[in-house]
Each structure stands twice: as C-alpha cells, then as structure tokens.
Length: 131
Image 1 (spheres, rainbow, N blue to C red):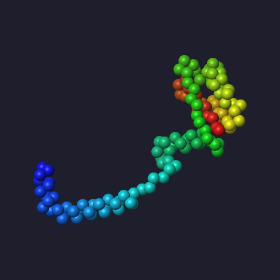
Image 2: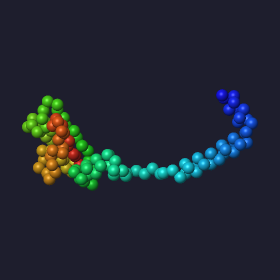
Image 3: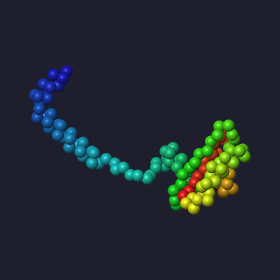
Image 4: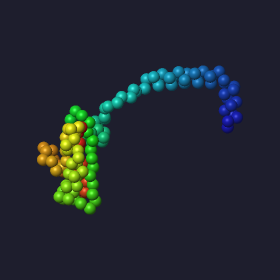
C-alpha cells in the first residue's frame, strides 16, 4: 500500500506539491481567523454560569478577596451546640484580626438564609471569610 502511494506521489509530484502548498496556505488562513481566547466571562446558560450567578446573588462579595472554609463532622449535626462551639472556636483567632473584613457563618444573624451555608445532610457548614 505504501509502495503504491509512493509511486503515485512520484508520478504526480508537481500536482502533489501544488495541492500541499494550497492546503498549507488555507490552513494558515483558517488559523488566523480562529477565535481569540478571553478571560473572565462565563456562558450564562451553562451550569457553571448559572451556579456563579446564584452564588453572586445569594452571597454578595465585598471588594476584597474572600475564601470559604468548610467545617464537617460526620457524627455531629451542624445545628447542634457542640458543632457550633467547635466552629466558633476555630474562627476565634480570625475574628480580632484587623485584616479580616467579615466572617459569615450559618450561626450569624444576617439577612441571608443560614440554611444556604449548611449541607443537605447537615454534617458540614460553609463559612465565608472576606479580607
């Protein structure tokens, strides 16, 4: 099979060379017309885009950076006093820190629904820390 291909290419070398050149020019043209990558945007109809919009709507961010801490304990309910005490004890060193703008826990009396920050099985909570 390769021998037949080699004979064809040798016999029609100028045609093969010309077609190869045209394909090269066409591929360079198509590559130059390709889309440019941009950072930042999400496709709003995708699942990740809808999730991002939901997070922004439910947990509005301040101007600075934020991070989320997840506390979990498979043997305790997140609404139990023991679980709450453990979370509060873990957050105690952060609260007086002047670099921390805010800490939002499901136990804070804020305007948002605290159930959003508690997992469905009630064995984990999310805490948002803004710096």
